[in-house]
Structure formats: structure tokens, C-alpha cells
Length: 467
Image (cartoon, rainbow, N blue to C red; front, side, top):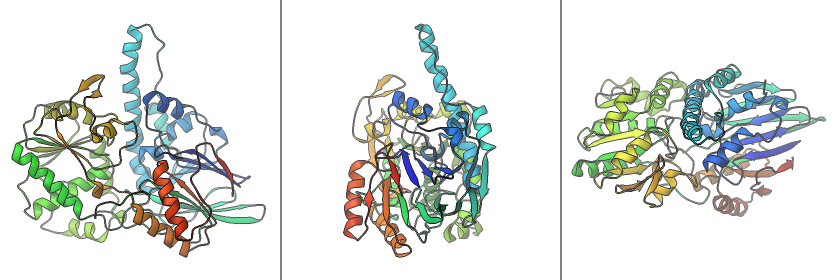
């Protein structure tokens, strides 16, 4: 048996891991690589394996860096099933279609310029038609239900507590009369966050592929999240500015809305108008309402309450779909809150709001998620100014803050706790750290080894390992 690491290996984005038992080839995730535009496009288009030879995909969750390149896989000849949870399947119908429209629109914009210059025109990475073909291949299963994605492979999905529908993958692999249990963590969530249940620790692991995003740092306590949000709201209220929050449409947006509602219910400050300026986030929020099986006890109590109302939909909250409504926000006077995608500022409506509001000292830009290297969000967070937005230099005069308390990823302590419980419930022989930058992986490796773990490594992209 072998594992080939083709994405999120020595880096954070593009989760793609190929398990080859000799009888079957299973792909764990097929995510978009995000980074320098040209490099990202080439890597996402040119898959490093034969798509037609893949028997099945088991998908951990719907974030694009885990699911976003599935249409390229299907476009390249994959004809197997894509196994995942019910919530992830529903989310992907929106996430992937939104991604396809962005791919098409971005290429059209670039091609207008290239056409004027007499240069060769580009094709989009994939189209809505490719997404439709991809969605036909989805097979949804319940948490903890056993299924057989390929010959000699039995599988189970357990709640990873990261986003709605997220899962860790348990694979029982059999070949040549030998049986091994491989656990792929997916993205490990944090304990004690609102809305979703805490992550489940898989049992019986012998081989572990484990995320390491925050292997070198601790988050602020979850209860700090509301305090940071209250401080940011106070800032823009006092200055009559705008609070601009780049946030992923899936997960972070819903938590921010939930926290704002909590603050207002507690009387921490007067209600501000809040706009979730994202058709995708609007659709995703509807999917949340369809999957209460993923909610924690607090969220279920809130939904049943006569006084708290709908924590994802209240009077001062507006979900915008129309482009005209979005454009109108650029000239709105504060105070107010605009939450818009993308979370790393690599596209979407957030770019317009940064261009119009982040140039004002009265505004505040709050980052609530990981910012990968070379992304616009990372540059703004590091204090670079001006930054290029739509090809033009834009001065960032707004205050910029970061709130790790909103991360949906386990921090260093959370990762070590997860690994410790997995070790107690199995006999882990080898650990492969993925989905992390080299420094984070090095620090996490040291900590795991100090706690008795053996066989810990962080494979580079393209590494093929016998298990």
C-alpha cells in the first residue's frame, strides 16, 4: 500500500492525498491550490495523476481548498463516486457552482485584455456544466455509517467539528490478506465553539494523516471572540466608520452573525446595520437551517427559544444577492458592518469594499481566518500599503486587526489533544503532517515526539510512501 501526497504538503491549501492499496485508488479530498495566480491555475489544471484511474473520492468537507478542484478531476476523466456527509454534499452544490462562475468571470475579464493585445486566450479552469457533472457523482452518507467506496476499502466519517458537515475519514484497507486502518483528520475543529458539535476522536488508527495548520501557535480563548467583535464595533460606532470583515462564506460568516446577535441580546452596544454581502453566504446559511443534526446543544436551545429568535436572521441583518445592492454599500456611511467573501481577499465582493472603505481611517478591517502566503489578505495583515486591487494600488488607511479566536481550526494545544486521544485509542505507527506551513509542522513534530509519538514526518509534495 502507498500514499501519495499531492496537495497541502508543506503548505496549507490544495488538500489532495492518494491512497493506493494495489487493488483500489482512493483520493482523500481534491482541493484548489491557492497562491500566486499563474502557479495556482497551472497546478489546479494539470493533475499529477490519472483521474480516470481513481476509483473513488472521500471528501472531508466543503471548503474549496479541500473540495474546489473536484470539477477538474471529473473534467479529466474521473468516473467514480464522491463520498461525503449529507451537509457537505448540499454545501458543495453551492460552493462549487459559485467557484465555477468566478472561474468563468475571471477568465472573461483577463481575456478581454489579452484579446486587445492579440494574445492567446485562456479557458476557465472549469465551468458550471463541469460542476453539474461533478454533483451527479456525489454519494451522501450519515456520520458513523459504514460504506465501501472501493474494492477492499471500508470507510466511516466521524464529526470533525470544523464546519457544517466536516468529517475525519476512517479507512480500513485490505490487500494481500493484510488489513490496516488509516485515519485522515481532515481539518480538526475547536472544542467549545458555537453552533456546531465538538470534534470526535477516531479509534483504532495505525496510520494518521493529520492537519497541522496551527501547530506552532495558540488561539485566543473562544470567549475572547465576542470581546474582540465588541471592541471593533465600538471603534466604528465612535468614528462612524465601517467594520469590514473578509470572511469565508461557509462557517466563519455564520459564526460572526451568531456572535453579533449574542452581543445585541446582551445589550453590549446598540444594534448596527449588518450586511452579509455574498449570495453564496446567503445560500450556505439556508443549508445550515437544513442540517440541525450538526448543531450543538446551545444552538438547538437558541433555535427553540421564544426570546432569542433566529440567530442567523434578525431585523438589522441583511443578506444581499443583487449586484446593485452590493455596489450601494460602497457609498454607505457608517457605522455598520459588512461581511463579504473571500476570506483571503483573493476575489469576490470584499475587494470592492476594501477599495472603497479600507482607504478611510474611520474604518476597521478585521481578519477572522487564516491568511495563506502570497494572498492579498496576508499582505494587508502584514501591514503592506499600497496593495494591488483590480490592478490598481490602494492605500490601506483603515485600522487592521486579527482575531484568532474565530479560527475554526484547532490550535497547537487542540491538535496535541486530538493526537493524544487518537494514540490512546489506537496503535499509531506513522504520522504524516499535512495542511500546514513548514515552521508549524516542525514545531508540531517536536511536540508530538516529545509526547511519545513515533514515525512523525511532514511529506513534501509528490512524496510516495509505503505503509
